[in-house]
Image 1 (cartoon, rainbow, N blue to C red):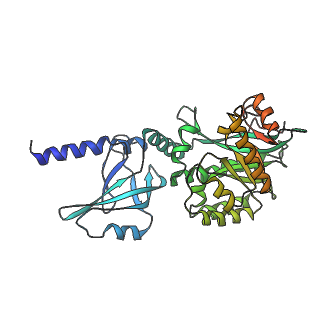
Image 2 (cartoon, rainbow, N blue to C red):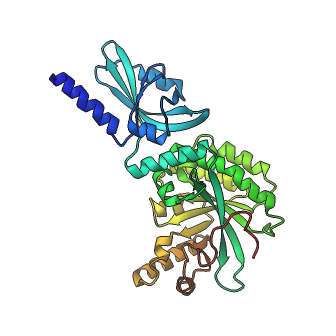
Length: 363
């Protein structure tokens, strides 16, 4: 075997077994080859192939740029998979071979866990295996009234078993495909509002999780406004929880969009406070009404150092006229300790376990 043949063998085998999904196409978009990771995330069988299209024609023009060295750049591509469309962010490599050019499309994935999350989301979107559970939030003191409800996305496998969210959401929350999950979940949330009157929940705020990345999606604001207009609700009935675990690069745009959402009478909560990026800057620049302390602080409330941090977070919320919710209350001692630290509202398994809409009531 010649050196050239050896090099070709090692290169093709490396791409085939690489943990990142790679797809080779012609400049017209015809799929010529997929590696194992691509076949895995798209659940491809036999000779199945996805169809790939550029979202922006300008990207195609860039891809035709002549160079002796392969060009690479980020683009969004529409991927049609068994009559279902997905939009994904990919790294496009323009590879010259002799007198022709080919596209090596790389779907960014940093681990096997990330691959599993991508496969799960794509499969659940394709087969409508996304559902919703609901968890109540309570006032911890006084009459311990019901103050709010959080809608929690659930992913189901082909056997209708729940796939844990921590196996999915943290790995794809910052990706465009997760925005499709959020947007498709809105119809499920509408079912709650259709049923809440008979359940005695008309005066309770429902909170829905939206990643910071989704808020920046170019179509999200228009879709969300249309969604609100289709609901028979009054100000204070609905809120969104902005998850801060995905890094937010365009804070000014997010602030403007959240302000537009707030003007619709929708409450804005900052979820998982203290667990992700730029927490203090978020408080400074975003129009937040509710601050939700991440459960990692609640789990270690017996530690003096952690107690001080909780008190500081509560003081910040009070100073900024925000409501403060302590998440992750799973045992009685945590509730008592949270109350002693000044926390007035809480959420967690000890107070209420997430349940289906059918089992939800104003208890």
